Image 1: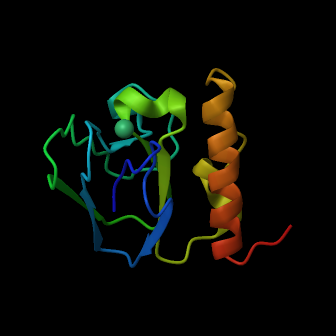
Image 2: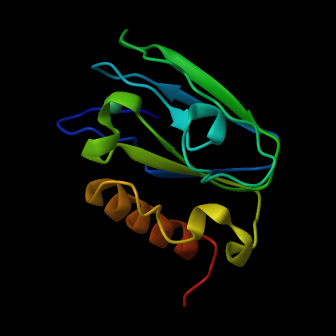
Image 3: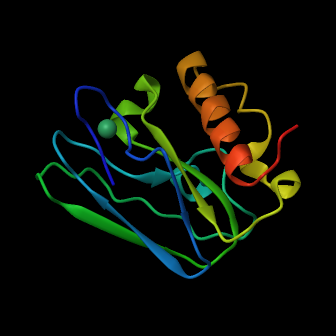
Length: 135
Ligand SMILES: [Cu+2]
């Protein structure tokens, strides 16, 4: 599900899996990572409480893949290390979480650049719609 075709983005921006499901990212071109917004990656927490972190590291080979298995229900935001400021962010929905209890869906962190905050707002709208939360 990665990446760069004319722009820097994850495709699709939002994916949904069951609890215990695995997401596989494939690098189409360029050099990218998939990295959780998790304190373990020195980032604000935009994943469920107690969720496992992940960080693929930079992947430069075409066709390189990275997998992560999601054991904790909830909404996860992640980014590409070199292209975060270009808005290369994505989201994973695991299971059928309550949108009102998701750390990831709160207001984007104030100390992030505007491009990142805008992208998080956009992702949150897609996620809320997917979860049937219309207000
Ligand atoms: Cu990238």
